[in-house]
Length: 125
Image (cartoon, rainbow, N blue to C red; front, side, top):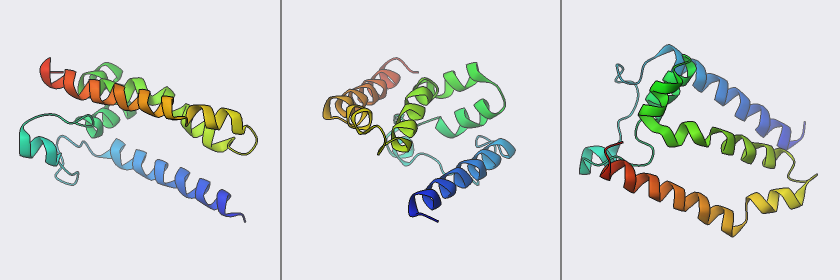
């Protein structure tokens, strides 16, 4: 079995295991899940604050609750899927892979994350 297939299978198993854990346990009510150190130290939300609870909400079909918890996570799911697809077709469609991993694309994603980080703390999102 090739290394790439082993990595893909391991990734799928990890995603399924994570989905089962996040579906079965509510991060808001369980001490099993880590708390955000940035929030604990500064009182400000990081770009990822609310992600665990948003994943739990999404797995239970509560899209609006997930949007309230971390809108960036919810709206970035298609982008994450696009990057996953890009990785799968990396060798068969190298031009596509290089476009989505180009410096302008990376800077755009970084800018959105930083803007989200700032706005959620200023506006209380």
